Image (cartoon, rainbow, N blue to C red; front, side, top):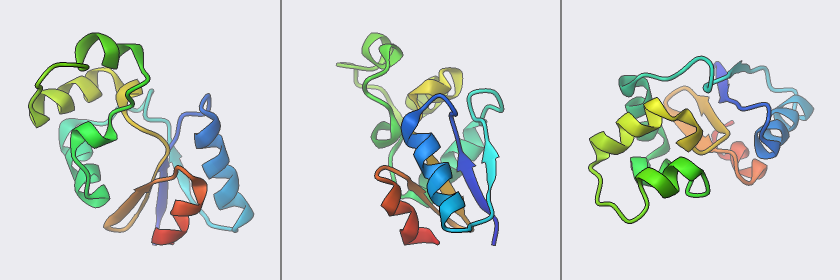
Length: 114
């Protein structure tokens, strides 16, 4: 079964996850989601696989979060739209295998779907 990593090569945790999969000998594809952006339906599918809400997947340390999300009562749809517009808001790395996914922080969580 195919393993996909939503990857940001500038992120240390994302690089650690890729290295971890390499060390384990797991074949995987990377998707540079900052360049190859997700659409709403793909992001919704990933949230279902993660069994998470959009708010749970938002990176709360990003400036765009502080400017456009923090302290506001945004709907799930509004958050999805912001995450599509500003993909840096999406927590990383996300590892997907079949109908399951996990945020690979810490990297050992990846084992739960392999």
